[in-house]
Amino acid sequence: MDSGFDFDVIQRSLPYLFKEGMTFTVTLTLLAMTGGIVFGTLLAMMRLSSVKPVSVLAGGYVNLMRSIPLVLVIFWFFFLVPYIGAWILREPNPVRVGTFWSALITFTMFEAAYYCEIMRAGIQSIPRGQVWSGYALGLNYWQTMAQIVLPQAFRNMLPVLLTQTIILFQDTSLVYVISATDFLGAASKIANRDYRLVEMYTFVAVVYFVISYGLSVLVKHLQERVAVIK
Amino acid sequence: MISLKNVSKWYGGFKVLSGCTTEVKKGDVVVVCGPSGSGKSTLIKCVNGLEPFQQGEITVDGISVGDPKTDLPRLRSRIGMVFQNFELFPHMTVTSNLTLAQVKVLGRSLDQATSKGLGLLERVGLTAHKDKYPGQLSGGQQQRVAIARALAMDPIAMLFDEPTSALDPEMINEVLDVMVALAKEGMTMMVVTHEMGFARKVAHRVIFMDGGEIIEDAAKDEFFGKPRSERAQQFLSKILQH
Figure 1 (cartoon, rainbow over the protein chains, first blue to last red):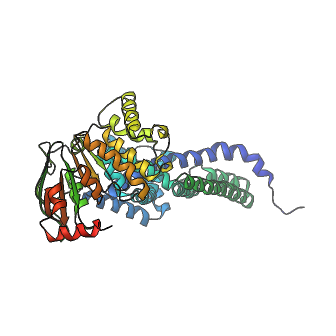
Figure 2: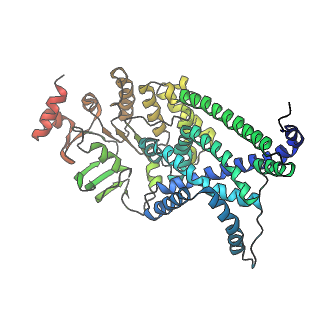
Figure 3: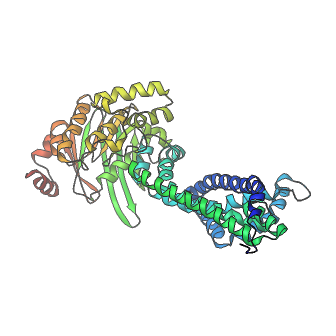
């Protein structure tokens, strides 16, 4: 069968694709998820604050991030972060940040807006009486949040948070615009070098599908288990 | 111990509390009753500052609740509160529910807090359930745990906000028994409830509220004998006819 395709290229490039590319993608996803959830939870608490300037500030940030295309934010941060770094560190020249750190900062900041909305819904799903009973026992705002509200909100929202993380996992492929060697970026480099575009992009699509679909099935199971515990 | 002077509260333009004045002395058991929407739950939540109020003054053990300089968490930790819907923390075991605030607020060691908590759990007859989650207990059991949790903080007074309203009839007595025992030990208590049997048994005074106002504030016998106000008479005749 001579179709003109050479799927052998995949096997040859597997170590590079996974050791370099997938490692980058997974590391970026996990770190941006962690940072995004932490920052997003803080934003959610700010959005729900009764102090007007605080909630307006957080609301403005979330709406800004959700109204700009992700690719644009990636570009924007890639060129902007070195200057911000120079400004913070008081260096005369733009700081070299590197594609990974630039991407990590971008995704953390960007995804935080989405995690914020999830955590906000989660916090609001906790009955008022839970907060009251925490306060009545003498816990302060931070203790009530940390011990009572957030653990419950987090558990209620776990499936949605993980679903958002699957989206994040796919979105990280956009770092190709800053020439980062993520999974797609690595495949793209091989594809162009060996001129095997169809083979490589098909393979990349299959890998993304298998991982994303597999995770979403897991999330579904988890959702049922969390529901039972409640 | 607890004193309210001319307390008023508005939700927007709607006045929910209007010039409420009363006092609960050390060792007093005061029952607050009245039709729903009369502001009694709001009033009791004002006492530990869960609900803000715009006018008047509330002091607990001489400390002003409305004063912005008051350390509210510290004051609240000295006042126990029991809610209509129990409000145990569903993600923690019964034991953790009992120890959390003792450790975080009072700074007790976990061992100390656990032995204190388990002692109180035994008192409400639920030692066997110490490792369960609140969701595995009946309503009456949950409310008894909630009382034990409040007592674990060694409160100087206890507030009860309709503690039996969310319970099935057969579970009401197990909770009331605990409350009666507490009252007989001399605990200062302010209790919002419709349980007139409880009021008859242990209350020193009964406060009747309607439309955000304290209509009647009388000694128990006086209140059940012949209330001065017509509204209180109507209310009593409605809930006591069965």
